[in-house]
Image 1 (cartoon, rainbow, N blue to C red):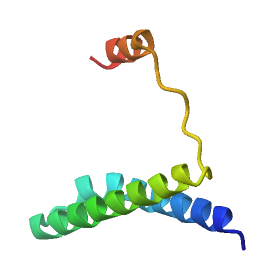
Image 2 (image 1 turned 120 degrees about the horizontal axis):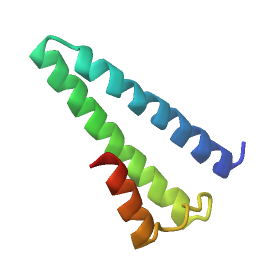
Image 3 (image 1 turned 90 degrees about the horizontal axis):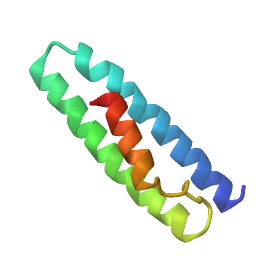
Image 4 (image 1 turned 90 degrees about the vertical axis):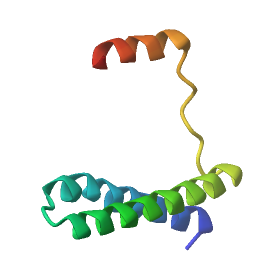
Length: 80
């Protein structure tokens, strides 16, 4: 399997796992368990960012263009 495909698969899996924590954490009553889930999520986010940086540097991933100041302002107005 090509390295590019493996990196893409790994990032997809990480994204999927991390999004699960958005559901799990708020529904967890036990404070110690909730904290453990948060730590696992944070570690996963750091690993995801490292892999994303590697993928970007190798040209495996090209991020979307930066939003303009007007686009940022428009989105902020929707959510604020």
